[in-house]
Image (cartoon, rainbow, N blue to C red; front, top):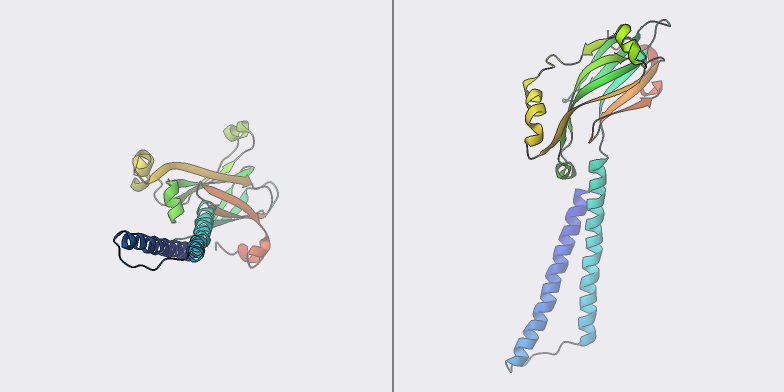
Length: 239
Protein backbone atom coordinates (compact mmCIF):
# COMPACT_ATOMS: atom_id res chain seq x y z
CA UNK A 1 0.00 0.00 0.00
CA UNK A 2 2.90 2.37 0.61
CA UNK A 3 3.95 1.96 -3.03
CA UNK A 4 0.41 2.79 -4.19
CA UNK A 5 0.37 5.92 -2.01
CA UNK A 6 3.76 7.05 -3.31
CA UNK A 7 2.74 6.37 -6.91
CA UNK A 8 -0.50 8.30 -6.47
CA UNK A 9 1.29 11.24 -4.86
CA UNK A 10 3.90 11.28 -7.66
CA UNK A 11 1.15 11.18 -10.30
CA UNK A 12 -0.66 14.12 -8.70
CA UNK A 13 2.60 16.07 -8.49
CA UNK A 14 3.27 15.48 -12.19
CA UNK A 15 -0.30 16.57 -12.99
CA UNK A 16 0.20 19.75 -10.96
CA UNK A 17 3.43 20.48 -12.84
CA UNK A 18 1.68 19.94 -16.20
CA UNK A 19 -1.08 22.31 -15.13
CA UNK A 20 1.49 24.95 -14.20
CA UNK A 21 3.17 24.53 -17.59
CA UNK A 22 -0.21 24.89 -19.32
CA UNK A 23 -1.02 28.08 -17.39
CA UNK A 24 2.50 29.47 -17.89
CA UNK A 25 2.24 29.15 -21.65
CA UNK A 26 -1.10 31.00 -21.67
CA UNK A 27 0.25 33.73 -19.40
CA UNK A 28 3.32 34.05 -21.62
CA UNK A 29 1.10 34.37 -24.71
CA UNK A 30 -0.95 37.16 -23.10
CA UNK A 31 2.21 38.97 -21.96
CA UNK A 32 3.70 38.86 -25.48
CA UNK A 33 0.52 40.17 -27.04
CA UNK A 34 0.30 43.01 -24.53
CA UNK A 35 3.96 43.86 -25.18
CA UNK A 36 3.42 43.96 -28.91
CA UNK A 37 5.66 40.98 -29.54
CA UNK A 38 4.78 38.20 -32.00
CA UNK A 39 3.28 35.11 -30.39
CA UNK A 40 1.71 32.00 -31.80
CA UNK A 41 -1.97 31.82 -31.05
CA UNK A 42 -2.93 28.63 -29.15
CA UNK A 43 -5.70 26.69 -30.79
CA UNK A 44 -8.82 26.61 -28.55
CA UNK A 45 -9.63 22.95 -29.20
CA UNK A 46 -6.06 21.84 -28.56
CA UNK A 47 -5.94 23.91 -25.36
CA UNK A 48 -9.21 22.41 -24.16
CA UNK A 49 -7.97 18.91 -25.01
CA UNK A 50 -4.69 19.44 -23.15
CA UNK A 51 -6.48 20.86 -20.13
CA UNK A 52 -8.89 17.91 -20.01
CA UNK A 53 -5.98 15.47 -20.30
CA UNK A 54 -4.21 17.15 -17.39
CA UNK A 55 -7.35 16.95 -15.24
CA UNK A 56 -7.94 13.33 -16.28
CA UNK A 57 -4.35 12.41 -15.40
CA UNK A 58 -4.60 14.11 -12.01
CA UNK A 59 -7.99 12.52 -11.27
CA UNK A 60 -6.79 8.99 -12.01
CA UNK A 61 -3.72 9.31 -9.81
CA UNK A 62 -5.78 11.08 -7.15
CA UNK A 63 -8.16 8.10 -6.99
CA UNK A 64 -5.16 5.79 -6.72
CA UNK A 65 -3.82 7.89 -3.84
CA UNK A 66 -7.20 7.80 -2.11
CA UNK A 67 -7.40 4.02 -2.53
CA UNK A 68 -3.91 3.64 -1.06
CA UNK A 69 -4.83 5.70 2.01
CA UNK A 70 -8.11 3.81 2.40
CA UNK A 71 -6.49 0.37 2.38
CA UNK A 72 -3.68 1.57 4.64
CA UNK A 73 -6.24 2.85 7.15
CA UNK A 74 -8.20 -0.41 6.92
CA UNK A 75 -5.05 -2.45 7.53
CA UNK A 76 -3.94 -0.19 10.40
CA UNK A 77 -7.23 -0.31 12.31
CA UNK A 78 -8.01 -4.00 11.69
CA UNK A 79 -4.44 -5.13 12.44
CA UNK A 80 -4.06 -8.17 14.69
CA UNK A 81 -0.87 -9.82 15.89
CA UNK A 82 -0.82 -13.42 17.22
CA UNK A 83 0.64 -13.44 20.73
CA UNK A 84 -0.20 -16.83 22.26
CA UNK A 85 -1.99 -20.15 21.97
CA UNK A 86 -4.07 -21.68 24.76
CA UNK A 87 -4.44 -25.49 24.77
CA UNK A 88 -7.00 -26.90 27.25
CA UNK A 89 -6.89 -30.59 28.19
CA UNK A 90 -8.58 -32.73 30.86
CA UNK A 91 -7.31 -35.99 32.29
CA UNK A 92 -10.34 -36.87 34.46
CA UNK A 93 -13.77 -35.28 34.73
CA UNK A 94 -14.09 -32.94 37.68
CA UNK A 95 -10.40 -32.15 37.97
CA UNK A 96 -8.84 -28.79 37.17
CA UNK A 97 -8.14 -28.05 33.55
CA UNK A 98 -4.59 -28.53 32.34
CA UNK A 99 -3.79 -25.45 30.28
CA UNK A 100 -0.72 -25.09 28.10
CA UNK A 101 0.10 -21.56 27.03
CA UNK A 102 2.49 -21.04 24.14
CA UNK A 103 3.62 -17.42 23.99
CA UNK A 104 5.10 -15.79 20.90
CA UNK A 105 8.20 -13.95 22.03
CA UNK A 106 9.48 -10.72 20.44
CA UNK A 107 12.51 -12.37 18.83
CA UNK A 108 10.47 -14.93 16.91
CA UNK A 109 10.84 -17.61 19.58
CA UNK A 110 8.12 -19.28 21.63
CA UNK A 111 7.82 -19.99 25.34
CA UNK A 112 5.72 -22.93 26.49
CA UNK A 113 4.36 -23.47 30.00
CA UNK A 114 1.65 -25.64 31.56
CA UNK A 115 -0.61 -24.81 34.51
CA UNK A 116 -3.52 -26.41 36.34
CA UNK A 117 -6.44 -23.97 36.35
CA UNK A 118 -9.62 -24.50 38.37
CA UNK A 119 -12.98 -22.87 37.68
CA UNK A 120 -15.48 -22.72 34.84
CA UNK A 121 -13.36 -20.45 32.66
CA UNK A 122 -9.76 -19.47 32.08
CA UNK A 123 -8.73 -15.80 32.04
CA UNK A 124 -5.68 -14.35 30.33
CA UNK A 125 -4.72 -10.89 31.59
CA UNK A 126 -2.24 -8.30 30.41
CA UNK A 127 -1.27 -4.67 29.98
CA UNK A 128 -2.11 -2.61 26.91
CA UNK A 129 -0.52 0.59 25.64
CA UNK A 130 -2.70 2.14 22.94
CA UNK A 131 -1.14 4.79 20.70
CA UNK A 132 -2.94 7.75 19.17
CA UNK A 133 -4.98 6.87 16.09
CA UNK A 134 -2.72 8.81 13.74
CA UNK A 135 0.24 6.73 14.92
CA UNK A 136 -1.75 3.54 14.25
CA UNK A 137 -2.35 4.88 10.75
CA UNK A 138 1.38 5.43 10.29
CA UNK A 139 2.06 1.83 11.27
CA UNK A 140 2.88 1.99 15.00
CA UNK A 141 1.18 -0.99 16.65
CA UNK A 142 -0.25 -1.55 20.10
CA UNK A 143 2.25 -2.55 22.79
CA UNK A 144 1.26 -5.26 25.25
CA UNK A 145 2.41 -7.58 28.01
CA UNK A 146 0.76 -10.85 29.11
CA UNK A 147 0.86 -10.93 32.91
CA UNK A 148 -1.41 -13.64 34.38
CA UNK A 149 -3.37 -16.79 33.66
CA UNK A 150 -6.08 -17.39 36.24
CA UNK A 151 -9.41 -19.06 36.88
CA UNK A 152 -12.93 -17.64 36.76
CA UNK A 153 -16.33 -18.94 37.91
CA UNK A 154 -19.65 -18.16 36.29
CA UNK A 155 -21.22 -17.33 39.65
CA UNK A 156 -19.81 -14.65 41.94
CA UNK A 157 -20.67 -16.81 44.96
CA UNK A 158 -18.40 -19.54 43.62
CA UNK A 159 -15.58 -17.03 43.32
CA UNK A 160 -15.79 -16.47 47.10
CA UNK A 161 -16.10 -20.09 48.17
CA UNK A 162 -14.39 -22.33 45.63
CA UNK A 163 -10.63 -22.68 45.02
CA UNK A 164 -9.06 -20.30 42.54
CA UNK A 165 -5.90 -20.43 40.44
CA UNK A 166 -3.58 -17.55 39.65
CA UNK A 167 -0.36 -18.03 37.67
CA UNK A 168 2.03 -15.17 36.82
CA UNK A 169 3.41 -15.09 33.29
CA UNK A 170 6.14 -12.50 33.91
CA UNK A 171 8.96 -12.40 36.44
CA UNK A 172 8.26 -8.84 37.56
CA UNK A 173 4.55 -7.99 37.56
CA UNK A 174 5.28 -4.57 39.09
CA UNK A 175 7.71 -3.60 36.34
CA UNK A 176 8.76 0.05 36.81
CA UNK A 177 8.19 0.90 33.13
CA UNK A 178 4.58 -0.27 33.18
CA UNK A 179 4.00 1.38 36.57
CA UNK A 180 5.19 4.63 35.01
CA UNK A 181 3.02 4.14 31.91
CA UNK A 182 -0.09 3.47 34.02
CA UNK A 183 0.50 6.64 36.00
CA UNK A 184 1.78 9.05 33.36
CA UNK A 185 1.14 7.34 30.00
CA UNK A 186 -2.09 9.21 29.10
CA UNK A 187 -0.22 12.51 29.59
CA UNK A 188 2.32 11.62 26.92
CA UNK A 189 1.55 13.22 23.53
CA UNK A 190 1.70 9.98 21.52
CA UNK A 191 -0.19 7.72 23.98
CA UNK A 192 -3.97 7.39 23.86
CA UNK A 193 -4.35 5.27 26.99
CA UNK A 194 -2.74 2.55 29.12
CA UNK A 195 -4.97 -0.05 30.74
CA UNK A 196 -5.35 -3.65 31.86
CA UNK A 197 -7.13 -6.03 29.53
CA UNK A 198 -8.36 -9.63 29.80
CA UNK A 199 -10.00 -12.32 27.69
CA UNK A 200 -11.74 -15.39 29.07
CA UNK A 201 -13.41 -18.48 27.69
CA UNK A 202 -14.92 -21.72 28.97
CA UNK A 203 -12.48 -24.35 30.17
CA UNK A 204 -14.88 -27.29 30.54
CA UNK A 205 -13.80 -29.16 27.41
CA UNK A 206 -10.65 -29.80 25.43
CA UNK A 207 -10.09 -26.89 23.07
CA UNK A 208 -7.53 -24.60 21.51
CA UNK A 209 -7.71 -20.81 21.43
CA UNK A 210 -5.47 -18.45 19.55
CA UNK A 211 -4.84 -15.13 21.28
CA UNK A 212 -4.28 -11.95 19.27
CA UNK A 213 -3.67 -8.34 20.17
CA UNK A 214 -5.40 -5.64 18.14
CA UNK A 215 -5.57 -1.88 18.31
CA UNK A 216 -7.85 -2.04 21.38
CA UNK A 217 -6.76 -5.13 23.28
CA UNK A 218 -6.67 -8.92 23.36
CA UNK A 219 -8.84 -11.19 21.19
CA UNK A 220 -9.49 -14.93 21.66
CA UNK A 221 -10.55 -17.13 18.74
CA UNK A 222 -11.25 -20.83 18.93
CA UNK A 223 -9.10 -23.00 16.69
CA UNK A 224 -9.12 -26.65 15.68
CA UNK A 225 -6.71 -29.28 16.95
CA UNK A 226 -5.43 -29.61 13.40
CA UNK A 227 -3.71 -26.25 13.92
CA UNK A 228 -1.05 -28.06 15.97
CA UNK A 229 0.87 -31.19 14.88
CA UNK A 230 -1.23 -33.58 16.97
CA UNK A 231 -3.08 -33.72 20.24
CA UNK A 232 -0.53 -36.12 21.66
CA UNK A 233 2.25 -33.69 20.81
CA UNK A 234 0.48 -30.97 22.75
CA UNK A 235 0.69 -33.14 25.83
CA UNK A 236 4.48 -33.07 25.51
CA UNK A 237 4.86 -29.36 24.79
CA UNK A 238 5.53 -28.31 28.37
CA UNK A 239 7.76 -31.22 29.31
